[in-house]
Image 1 (cartoon, rainbow, N blue to C red):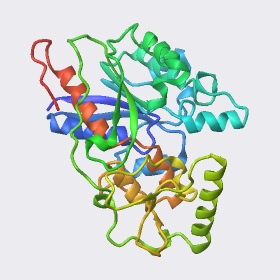
Image 2 (image 1 turned 180 degrees about the vertical axis):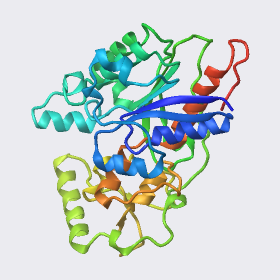
Image 3 (image 1 turned 90 degrees about the vertical axis):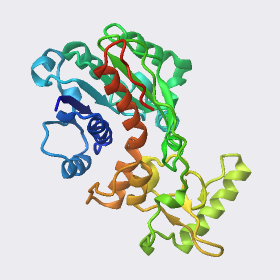
Length: 336
């Protein structure tokens, strides 16, 4: 069995790695992740519960460009769901309120793309898969994305990035993300996966008997309703959002869900207080398997699940990437 190697940057809890592993298994390849980077200790804890021991570099920014050749192992595919906060609408708004820089000017997270670029230019893997928020496409009128693509295209064939929505790939969550892929060798046009439009409902992802602790209190429910009225009068939005089990999809579940869950409260019936999603349900809405293990607090689990990638979507992207790598110019297979 042929082996394809990878490195998993800004790995979180390993959603990109799970996706690639599933794709490789379907195509008859053995996979080996040679390195992962993740700065958050709680995410490291969850990652290591689910994967065999893998070399860890906590902070990818700690590696100087002159040290990349000897520090980063050779690999076939680079995976990177690089931090989205500097480019997301919520992240930009928060940074503006705190009088902080955003985009590339955010020196904590905004310039991490250049660390990826340095690794690509020096190690030259056969392919890369990057994921970020859809707002990256329009941020600063698309100038930032154009700059990224120009730099990536110096050494790689990079087709136009694609925004894909998790709800179009069998997950009951509206989660639109931009995907950027690149190949060291051009073998013809690359095609992103087409949506499967598999019909699902929110109830398909819910626990049958969720613990009662996730039902919000009378005090919090009353507070949500009052705030919604105030916000509507002030034109600031409509506050909490009720999601019905019969709905086709939830809104995007973010890492902020741990606060009060107001963006997605599950309807339980007339005259009953709604409830928050459980951490397992959020992971499920992201496509993580039931076998996925986590033993952190609910707060950390919500953050981890909210920051993760939608497995169903990334797996399909990985399938098309691996297929592209494995075929000659004239024998490219079509992978739906």
